[in-house]
Image 1: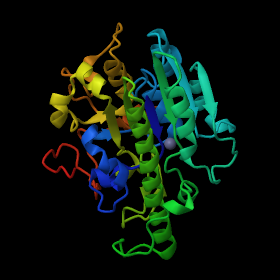
Image 2 (image 1 turned 90 degrees about the vertical axis):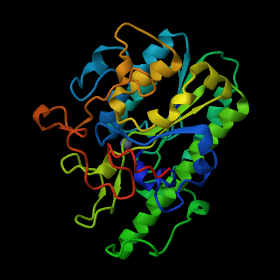
Image 3 (image 1 turned 30 degrees about the vertical axis):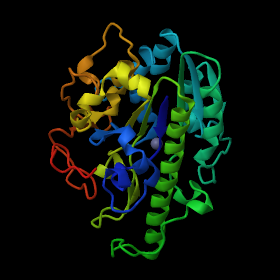
Image 4 (image 1 turned 90 degrees about the horizontal axis):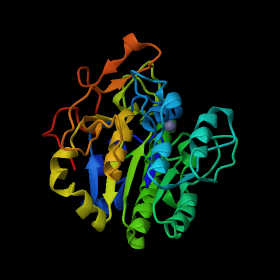
Length: 346
Ligand SMILES: [Zn+2]
């Protein structure tokens, strides 16, 4: 199972050392998880990122998603029935590409018919359809769940009873009243996302099915994290770490753990620096699928993994691409600096 999140910066997750308790439920199951702490998205936008994440395309070869098989094609060919459950909008022009990806699955469940992103639509709606698919009789299945996560406007992303953080106690003094409100709303959205992702994991565990679940966010989000320029959102032209640092988690059933034997290596592999543009190699590796062109050095869980450049930027402007291995971000406030392995907060 693949859970794709939305606009969630890992530096705002308690699980990654953020001082606020935004991830109580994931914290309570963290011994069951591999928590990768140096994973980056190649771009700060949903569609542009997923074109790379779900295919062989990357910053240097951005068009390969049109020419080579995608993750959905790969899983189908390997004999899996494929499902796409989404709480993202499917009715707007901007999201046509997402609909195209989802149509590559055998079955689609579209749960969000809003035309405006500024409307309340909670990710909890994915849980029931997911459980139904999980427990149906199909033997080999590949389920993608696409969440709205912590997309702006943040207060539309969580129900009233998840309104946990308020006021400006412990918050940076430079924030205006409205910014304090949005800062809190973002953390509340992260806390609700924590609930949804952990509920999916717990359902999977309870089903006793043989398998694994990966969760990551498509990209990050800046929400007034930097006093030098108070900004909320994402801007590829003025990149900050918050727009690219993403949570990346792996849960495996007990039977899968034995089968995959990743466990003994987990203390080192979780600190590998990685771009989700190479995700298709990790996924194929986890699923035990090999194919011509499989590159083990691009799988974050493979013993043959090696460091690759972590490119960010607009691939239409190749000279301007930035390799985070060479030019890391210097503005990580609550997370972990690239390459500083001693700084673990988990
Ligand atoms: Zn997105």
